[in-house]
Image 1: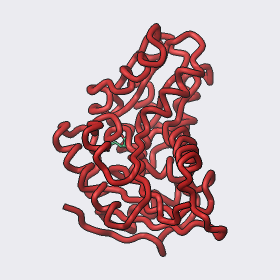
Image 2 (image 1 turned 60 degrees about the horizontal axis):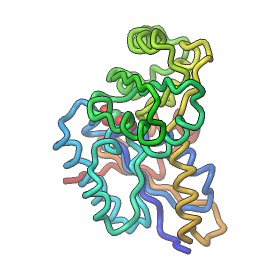
Image 3 (image 1 turned 180 degrees about the vertical axis):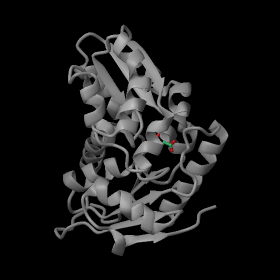
Image 4 (image 1 turned 90 degrees about the horizontal axis):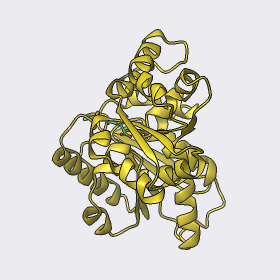
Length: 269
Ligand code: DGL
């Protein structure tokens, strides 16, 4: 049993898709969320910069005595070398592995699409992981950098003309390739779930890494006897590196609740 909080981080608000799943699955756990909104997006930055930022984010969470670190960011998860995550004093989990396991299990024809940030698609971590599980699979990666900005600015409805135009531009090549399964390889993208699903006429199975990872976290904490022994509802804290007001506004859409009383802007270095 371990009553310390779980630490979750992302470059911005996207990781809240994972946080929401964690809150539902593990209602008695305390969770600290860190969103580096002052430096989002990470996905168009160099590998070195992403690793440097991720280390700072992790150090911030460790300073709050977390029992586990969840990188709820496809970009960090696919970039951070195991040498860094293995050396942490607490267990670490990214979003790639759980999403890949599910996609490989659900894909009927083995034609798997992956959408993500430029860094995520460039480093091909999802592709390598998929072939590790299903060597015969065909993987089709597509970077969709504007999706993060659309989500951060509230353009995610299926009817939104800007979001629809971006979806057409980014997803048409994957439609051509006749994918049967698509990993939403960036934690911002589940907000576009309806839009993406309708683009493929609901014929493609979408995999949400945040949701899959939340299940993996639950299993890990259970198996390692690290669940909280508390019986009261979990306590949540949100830290961000840019305006708390802006964060809370977008977060209220992600989480369907008002988090202003639990949010605080901080600086990390
Ligand atoms: N949520 C991040 C990810 O999953 C956002 C990407 C970014 O910061 O560019 O990759």
